[in-house]
Length: 168
Length: 168
Image (cartoon, rainbow over all chains, first blue to last red; front, top):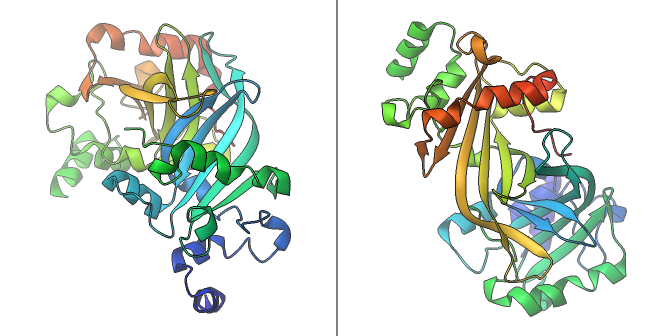
């Protein structure tokens, strides 16, 4: 707890929610994404579902975006831009034929975990968002992270750079 | 609270978790599924994700199964059969092309909400499970509910009649 408080004071602009979510993983620099220093947040698998999605070839994935409480409240309130402290996590799996039902397909092997963290001051140069793309729990390389913001900016700037809409 | 306690005592075999989850909706018989008397549980949209799925034509849906705490614990522990009080909710939406990304598809209009409730004594005749299929919040007709158990029994009896596996 002391570490979290000290980190909050030191960072100043970073909300305590963001610090708390990332405190455990940020101790090891190997867990941080290039450029942004984003890590996989503790406990994200328990977060609320924002929406599932499907990605065609060549990735061929089923996906689900989960959000922390700040994210969910912003979605439910229809609030844009998302407030600082918003964290979104996209889980992805290979899109695989169900062995139990001919017309159904289901998650296969996990592929990537992708994270967006809103901190409008820390990430002012990228629309207020920090990005992290993780494979087997480790950050992808610099080149992959150089493409994140340009794509979000080019396609969904009008929705505060976020692709995923709430699934009712 | 008094209603919940009285209902628990009256039902005897029904766990308090199940009763609590369904207390609000069961007041109105119009909200109950035929055969099983299952209703849409309060607050289910906040439950943890078990897994997404995709269903091909003719339904053409993206889906996500959420589970209550009892369900999630059983999945995480790899416990079969699921304990009484387990509730699973499958949300489904039309599988729709993303307007923002050529290779992605996303949830469109919501189609059905489907519920499975485990109560091994109350639902002894259907593997311990009660089923509910809801369209626009109202139960589907008797004919649709007559098909639930036969299909689950024919295909996934070995997994306690549950299709969905945990997405890691």
